[in-house]
Length: 409
Image 1 (cartoon, rainbow, N blue to C red):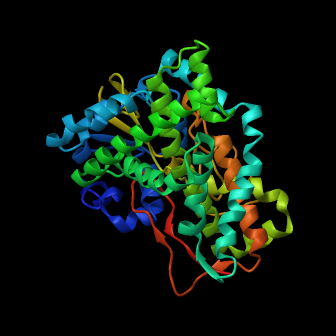
Image 2: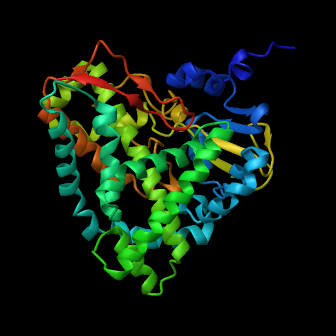
Image 3: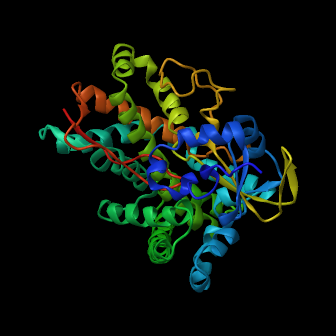
């Protein structure tokens, strides 16, 4: 009997904090040897190859309705405490399937109509410049904490009418809720933080909805409220739930995308030189960053029925993680996948998923990241990493980006 490779047991990448900094060697091992892998301690399957991840994103045998499974993953003595909050979050568009998902997605898309989106560019540019104004004379900053992290929060809060004085609290709430869903396994500490932050965020967002109902302003939240009042089917709970998911996903994804792009360009100076010489490559730079450092390395689904994949039997109710961080470096789909090259055309990367659940906010995330990167590099032409203070990475299974990124200019 062949000896178990330690990467399949005690050295599984989710168990080793340092591996979360750079999981790509392990991803390559699993793609080659165990592309459909069952990790028994978590009763969870992990899918590593591009063709499988792409197909399963569109496979109805995998369900997005996974809130109950998250509750069951929390400490047993805390499950009832959080069930009331998760009943609201169960209305998140990314937690629904079929006609229910399609109806809600279509209504939420009103908030990203051409008229509304047209106002984003100017706002994003102004906010990016506002953040850089604060540090311009200092000669140094933390490009994550001072720029990449606050910018998406400011943008999303602007879309929802969150007062400026509330934005730091919103970021804290969003981080705490995101950690509950993205840091594996679920811990008592994260569950407790989730409970407190959920209660506070729900109260705050209810107030925002009431204010927009009393005085519409033509922004994203006003569009959602109007959709309800036009009798098109958005309920109060659906507006509440999806404003919250926008506050969470709308800043977590984009802040990591901006941070990853800055880090990769500063550690690949030949790519940065290309970009400075040819600004038409900014779009490519964002897409290659999404491929090379997927901000969500994995996306969870629940098996809706028993089915087999490459001879492995997946059982109804089991978690199945689609590993985009691995699939986006699959050499069978992307030439030279471990080379960061902004002149590539990284078509069909899976960083935002594919199919019915393709990320609703992807156009906004791309726009924010491109404007942020171009504003930063234009205003700080001598930007480079601070050699005295190394970057620090989030050590969370399903969020990938720098927690701290010291730079000098």
